[in-house]
Every structure is written in structure tokens, then in C-alpha cells.
Image (cartoon, rainbow, N blue to C red; front, side):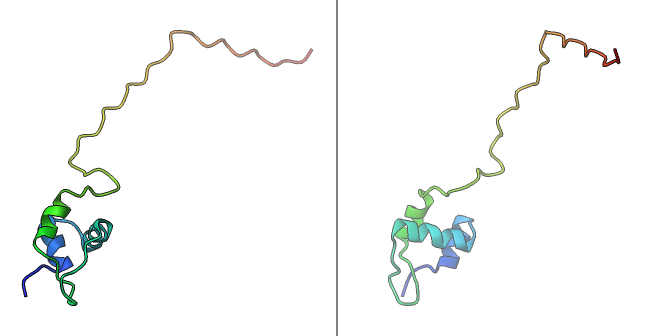
Length: 83
């Protein structure tokens, strides 16, 4: 019988096993055998399925806005004294 296990799918796609199983479940894909073998078409479906969560580390982060001080000077604090 031909097919891929969830572990093989995870290795081919370069994701961890839990993520592969989650994507398979979200797409509603059922295994073709009782041994949990999935058809080859599952790979194409899962390649186009976006993952949830954080962006990949190689994605360029947005540049931080530089902090600028306001042009207004803060008024000096009044000294507390006894009358």
C-alpha cells in the first residue's frame, strides 16, 4: 500500500509532527488506511495550508521607530520649603 505517515509528511514539509497532524485535521483529511497512511495529494494540500502563530525567524522584522524628544522644555520643579 502506498502512502505517507504523518511523520513522513512532517519531514518532507520541514515542520514538526504536531503541526503536521494539526494541519491534516484542520483540512479534514482522513487517512486512506487503518495504519494512518495518507495519499500523496495530501502533500500538495498541506504545502498551501498556512500555519498559525508566529512568523518565521527569517522574515525581516519591521524597523523600530526612533524615539524623539519633544522640543518643549519641562518646567523646573518648585522647591518645597517651610513658610
